[in-house]
Image (cartoon, rainbow, N blue to C red):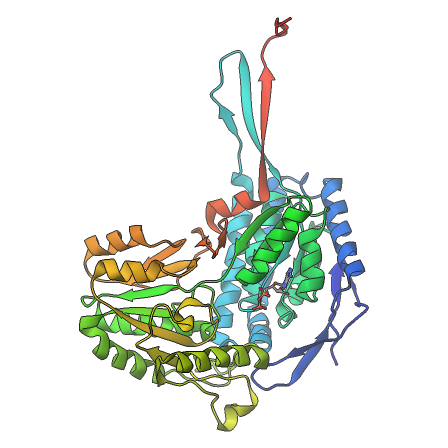
Length: 488
Ligand code: ADP
């Protein structure tokens, strides 16, 4: 059995407790055993990152050098793309075509921030002429980076690339279920000349042990987290109770996908299906509420159901597959309990709702599931399910669409489908969300900011703003004469 190491201080080492079974969710087969890092091992990783930061070996490297290192990481990711995509699919269950896109996006993220490293500049502030006031941008320090299992490699890239560009050092913690590609990334990083030891540490293990330690440690200056709102809250609390470290959070969502009667029909029908079923619905921005104008409700529902029936559920390594298994059998049980809850609350199940039989029975598969006539207050319309389950909610007119869209605690993303440009922008302005798509759902680019409002998070990743999470501003005042203040 393949035992996976920890990556601490530039060394691969066996963990004291290599007991985390890593499972292929399509087959139930065991892929490897990962280390469940102890508190002492986590502390060793934090100390390695602290030492690397305090030595100045990385923050003191030229921005040009840091950028070149990131470009080299991107190059190596692309060179190994097929192998990484396969590994991601075997570990996480997503269709290999999606995994290939994820690897390309991860490489693009390193390329973007590799280029941006040399474009971080300071400012001169307009103070009176007897002084010079400068704003310097400096790396925030040691970062704890905690990521989820739905895009294991891509989330590692979103976290590492801007932090490294800024000159920070990091301890990255993958999710329990999905350590494979993060550790492969550790191998890649380890082979890149000019990336000093200890700048990146990758530590697998349990959230309440490793993640909680990163959030609570006084040696960590910043924690960046992507995951559930519940865990985000506990991280924020740990930061508050320790050294008030900087916190950025990318949390859950219940994103509305809003369809007006004048929307382009075929694009809208496919957008409704893709919006929620891509990546098995295990997407923080999943369009898990389809809001549809009453005049087209029945016809649109039928078309969406018909389209969803064509989704090829199957072996995720088959390039023809469009939906794989959920990440674990335990997660499928959680999703199934929501389906049960939807039935109990009286929503009308119009597609799926169960585990497929036959060849797929041994994997953690779940049928694409559609509930119609969902009341906006029902649990399945309010809570994040994080699986292939969508709630269809009819509305009458623009104000009601907006009211329903905004009536959850979340505010990550949303989409509006219409050919009326005035209405599109009116709705865009009224949606309380960090990301809004018009006539599309889910496209995400490293060049544009990403993140949510309300209980979907704090701060923005990606784009030019994404690097600010890893920079502190220092204001420098330079007095331009030797005259005393003359106050006493
Ligand atoms: P899920 O329940 O879907 O796994 P989580 O938000 O719990 O979502 O997981 C996202 C990441 O947060 C994972 O890497 C997980 O190990 C980590 N995590 C879980 N609990 C904690 C915690 N108390 N403190 C810090 N990180 C945690």
